[in-house]
Length: 106
Image 1 (cartoon, helix red, strand yellow):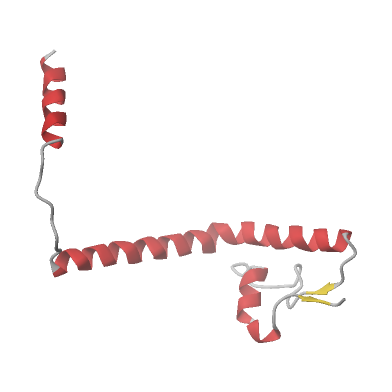
Image 2 (image 1 turned 180 degrees about the vertical axis):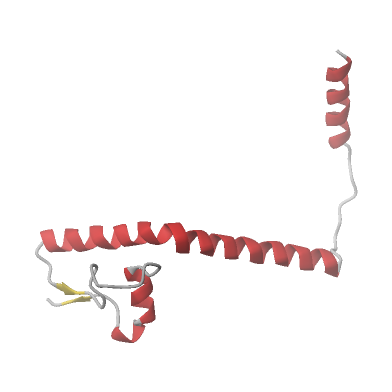
């Protein structure tokens, strides 16, 4: 029972009023910026290593739907083109952006 009382006391202390802060120190701002930057890099790495496969599956699905609907289109990079293992069709399209996006042939 004493342990439960301690938990309740700790919870009540957390509810106590604390003065609001209206400013941050430059070091705190720097730490927040570093944390945000690390999170953005981690999300990008996760997409690059894992999400690119989902992106390729989406592109394939759209291509199949267009083909089934009889819509003629030209992709800047064919889905089954030889490419480095770390490169997806989306990545190649970005790299080859001067070629332009998917074009419908009418």
